[in-house]
Amino acid sequence: CKDVFEKGLFIKGNLVELLQRHEVSKVFIEQPFTFFNSGGSSGKTMATLQRFNGIVSWIVYELLYIIPDYVGATKARKECGIKVPRGQKAKQVVLEHLIDNEKNFEIEFTRYGNPKPESYDRADAIVIAKAGYKLSQKNT
Image 1 (cartoon, helix red, strand yellow):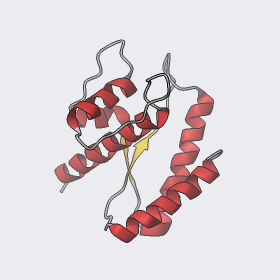
Image 2 (cartoon, rainbow, N blue to C red):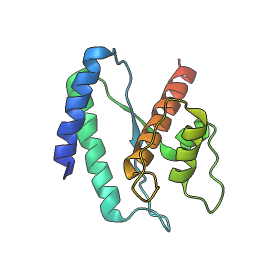
Image 3 (cartoon, helix red, strand yellow):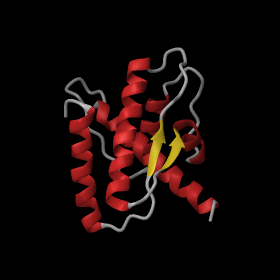
């Protein structure tokens, strides 16, 4: 997928397929950062993520008539008991946590033995979903 629109169509196709096999009553989407921090994402990256999250949010609403719940990454990690030590990258800590604690979580590696970037994204998505579910159970 090249741009956010192609990625949106890819997500929509996968969501339609998922809905044929599962009943979905809640959707959780990572709330993008709204501030700059040193060593963090650039403004361009943050704007792209905001745009993509908006597209995915609309697709969810269009297909399910559900307004997604947005969960911040820091809150999600805390809710899942993931502590990021100072100086360590959160994405790496999350990936290691899932490798150690989720028996069905599989990652792919580059030819150099590093996790492929999409492994980090999948790990983040799992943490957002688990945290969203836990938070929604607290609110019922």
